[in-house]
Image (cartoon, rainbow, N blue to C red; front, side, top):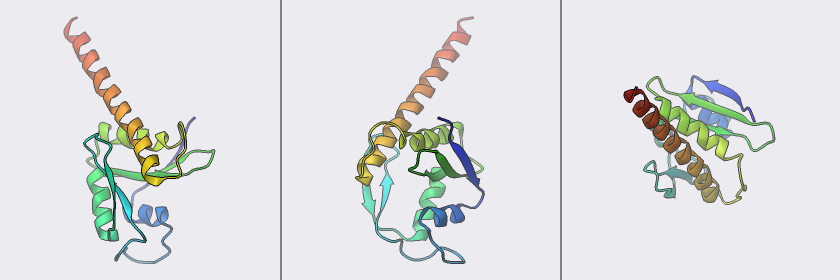
Length: 141
């Protein structure tokens, strides 16, 4: 499984792509329906929230990496990354998106996001453990 990566330099263009917005010019006004806002604390709590496009784009910027994946057999991940994104930010994002393609597929949007979040949490915990073990190994030389 090697995903195809499509990087966007323009976050707003990526959000338009994700929500299939044909409107030219800046995204403004309410989004269609509610959107999930995931809790970054690792508790896997999430809620559906009605947002404006402006608020949603601000939310995406706070994540420092944002994007989406397709639901087909060939995995394509479209993403935007801020200049200050860290390795952990990028690792969390890609683990989350790949998590959508692993295990059981849920038609319930919140369940599917929580499943992907579990892969994200596992990846970041594994990364931190590996960093710690390697640091300890180097210190004991």
